[in-house]
Amino acid sequence: MTAPQRIVSLLPSATDLLFDLLTDLGLAGRVVGVSHSCDHPRARHLPVLTRSIVDSGAPQAEIDRAVSEAVREGRALYQVDGTLLDQLNPDLVVTQGVCEVCAVTPGTLEAAVRYLPGCLPAANVLSLDGRSVQGILDDLRALAAATGLPEAGDALARQAQADWDAIRPVPHAPRVLTLEWTEPPFYGGHWVPEQVVRAGGVNVLGTPGTDSGRATWEQIAPLRPDVSVVLCCGYGLRDNVTFACNLPDLPLGEVWAVDANALFSRPALGVVRGAQVLADLLRGQAVPGLSERIR
Image (cartoon, rainbow, N blue to C red):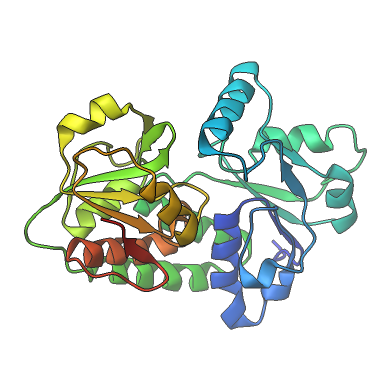
């Protein structure tokens, strides 16, 4: 099979993985289009093919209501510019099936091109589905195979696994609460509980490989975690500092904010660094630009 020369990525984690894979080989130019959420430096000037129906600048409670209503009514949270996709004429399109709230799914892509005769006739559509650290590495290998670079993908995955294994956990097993949203509270899911365990912590809410979940502050208060980490999905450090500063006055232990986009939210290689940053903050050590203690 001929390696794809024109790749469109419709989710930020795939864009990050693609540039991890392609840049050192001098092949970054193969990526010709991205989603509106892709913030990798090399993606900044590429055509944008998606938009969200939800205002990401709205308060968290309003975003939660809008998302819940759309999901309940069966409306897609993202729209794909099928005409632009047709013009870009990719031979590989990358989507995801992990979370309909986070990025474009195969169903949304299919709806966007349904009435465009001939659109994507030869394109391979790859849907990534990593819900754990191993799943992320499997996605990397699948993406590498789809781009005709299986050896490079395997080498990158083996290095990421070695870096993960080298993380030194804290010895005192603090009880950790991770918050993927704060209004209302959602606890961390998928790979986030694995990151906590790898760092040496004990999850008070959340199970590795399962979805994040909605909770209430009344349920959270009796858990009395030693450390609470605000890693709201889709946000960087500064926004998460703001969210952490507005947490209710409950026994949440040490409260930290982190750069969720870089370290926790995306099924990409940043989760390895995220586990290391988590181990550092469990030792009371902030990493400038990535983590900050609030109280």
